[in-house]
Every structure is written in C-alpha cells, then in structure tokens.
Image (tube, rainbow over all chains, first blue to last red; front, side, top):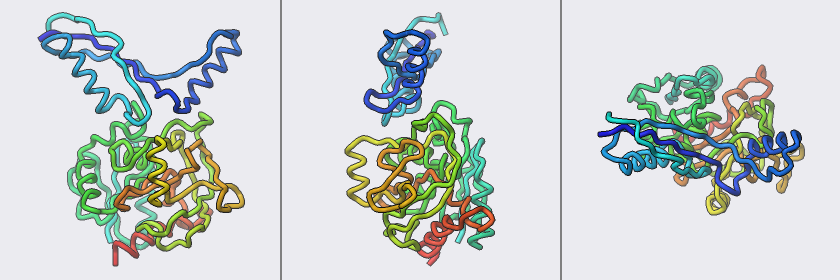
Length: 88
Length: 230
C-alpha cells in the first residue's frame, strides 16, 4: 500500500445557470479584466488515499465523486492530479 | 396518526413541524434522531427545514447518509408518506427519492418572504383537501431553492402531473408563474412517481395559525390525515 494525494475538480455542468460564476465574471469585468469571457465556480477537493497503486487511488477518487462529492444531476468532475505521498 | 420528525444536526424547523402537527393538526408527533434506525412506528416521516451538516458540500448531500435515512428510504419504498420541507426537499433529492436538484438562488440572495403558490394538482395525498388552482400563501426561507432538472425530467414531471406547487405572481392566473429563486418553470414542490413523497421549498408548517399570518399550510397536513389516517 502506498499513499496518494488525489485532487479533483467539481464544476457546474455547462448549460446550467451558474449565477455565482456570472457574479464573479461581472466583478472581474468591473476590475478591468475585459478579456475574461466566462467564469465557473466549483470545488477543489484534495484527498489522501491509501491504495495499491496510482490507478487504484484514482479509481477510488472517481467512485467518491460519483457517490458523494459531485451531484450527477448538475455537476461534472475531473481528476486534476494524482501524486505519490509515500508509503502508507 | 403519528408523524415522525427527523432531527439532523443543523435542522432548525423540526420544532415548527412538531408544533404544527401537535398544536394545529391535533395529532401525535415524535422526534427521530438522525443516528437512530427506528422510525418509532411513524405513519408519516417529515424531513424538516434547516441546514443539516451546515450545508457542507451541498445542501442535503451529507444528511442523506445518516442512519435514519436508510429507514426513511425503506419507508418511502413501501409507499409510506414522506414530506420533505426546504432542506428536507434538498435531502430527498440528494437521496434519490425525488428527481432533480436545488441549486443556489439565481439572485445569490437568501430569500425570506411569503410566496403565493398555486395548487397544480389535488390528486395527491398531500393536496386532496385543496381546490385545484387555489393560490396559497406560504413562506419561503432559503438560499438554495432553484429547482433544476434536465428537459426529459421536467417533461415527465409535467406530463405525469407531478408538479404539485408552482410559485405565482399577484394574479395567480393559469399562465402566470414566477420564481423567487430562479426555479425552472416556477416549480416549488413535486412528488415522486408513486405519489407518496412530496418535496417543497416553502414551509407549510409556518403557515398553520392566524398568528403566523396564514393558515394555508394546514391543508397539506389535513390532506395527509384524510388519506393516511382514514
């Protein structure tokens, strides 16, 4: 067993009204960030997972997203990174 | 008839629901602690409003894994009535008892006010005491009440007459709807396919006494009594 650090991104699904993202985009425009076209605010979750290998850690993180961390009705997720943390 | 009111850590409308049942309806109510696995022979389960688990992750996302929820889901699968109010509606959606999700209000503001709700169907165990098209005054108090579902789900809900309450403007006429929170099609409350689980963002338990400004919520409790208690 090794310990892995897995980071996931969870974002509102495209096409679903994201008022928070829009409010942030409006604020950025007010600050002069005219080039910012679109903003979506989601969550970044970091987990330390004990698993046999990197693939096992990623599988476990994916399962966690599907069952709890992301709402399958309104959100999409992606595994942002998987890195070794050392022996568990 | 016995109502079981679930208390999650962070529930804050459990006493209101209890009072509505005991004082206004004149029936029996018991509190069900979220860690318990015993519904105490409740005929109806109420998932009350509040901020269970501090709304961490998403409203209702963590509450649905409470031990009591396994029993609530079994109760619902057997046709037992479940009334999910506000956070209870969010929990019911997260638990898969109802389709769709409740997202942050479009205004990004917490909204606390009386709303006008049109009764879209009286053919449910929660609305049989109302007239179809009746407009009720019932308060809302939430920051995450924007009902959202995909087009297929919305079409199904509408087609099967499962949209129970819709927010309406002042006139309350048939084509008029309005969303204080950005809810799709002004949806304020829906039932599951079997018709025994109602989720609604407005708080009927806060509209059961003239002192509260409205008694329109009482009809929902009376409807359950008429159907389930009979």
